[in-house]
Length: 327
Image (cartoon, rainbow, N blue to C red):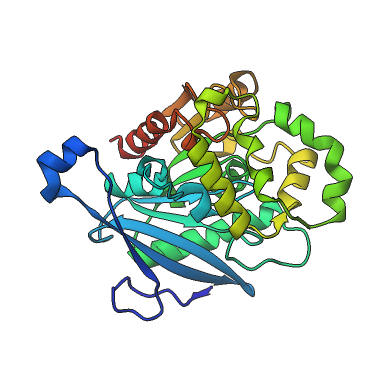
C-alpha cells in the first residue's frame, strides 16, 4: 500500500490544510477567550490496488501522541460530509470538530465509490469497503506510530467496520456501533422491493431534495433543525454526484454480515429512539453475544437515524467521547 500523504506541516505542498476557529458559547468566549482552540484540517490520500482513498483529518494544535478516532460513513454520503458538516451559525453539528476539541486526532475516510475516492465501474461490496478501511487504518497507524485506533461505524458503516474488526481486532481499542441495522429493520424491509434496481445500476443520482427525507423517517419534525437538513442536502448533492447501490444490494441480500461473537473489543451500540434501522428488539440479541465484558447499549432521545445531525446530537457526542476516553 502506498500513499502520497506526508507528515502534517503547514508548508507541505502536497497537503491542503484548512483552519477553522473552534466555536464556543458567548459565555465561554467572554471568560475563556484565550483558550479558544484552532482546529486543523488535513487531506490524505491512501492508495490500494489501483484505488485512491480520500481521508480527512482534524485535530487541535498537534496530532502527536493523541488518541486516534476513525469514523466510517454509511451507504449514502462520504466521511467528510457525514461527520464534518459545517452549518452556518451552528457549529455544534460537526462531530469531527467536537472530537478534535476533546483531544482526539480524528480521521474520516471515503471508501471506494464515495465522495472524492475512486469510483469503480461496477458494484462495490461491503467486503471491499472493509478492506479499504483496513488500508486506511494501516496508513494512520504508520503515520502516527500508533498500535490501535478507536473506531465508529455509522449505519452501513457498522457492517464494514464490524467485518474489519472480525479480521483485525488487534488494531481497534474501542468500537462504537452507531445505528446498526439488522435483518428485520423497518428501513431494510422498505429497500427489499428495489433489489432488481440495485442490481441493474451500480450508481444512482439523488437530487438535492432527495437527501432530506432520511431525517424524517419515523422521526418527529421537532427533532430536526431545518437549517441542518438544508445544509446537509445541499452538500450531499454537490459531493455525491453518483451514489453507489452496492451497499444497498448487500444489505438486502446478505445480512447479517457481522458475527457478534467475533467482535472481541469493548463495544458501545448506540442509536436514536426513532431510528428506523436500529432498535432494541433487533439489536439486543447481538449485544448479548458480544464477548467483551465492557460493553454498553445506549438509546439517545430526540433522534433518529441521522442522530449526529439531530436534536440529540450533543448527548450522542458526549457518549461517544466518554466511551473512547474511559480508562
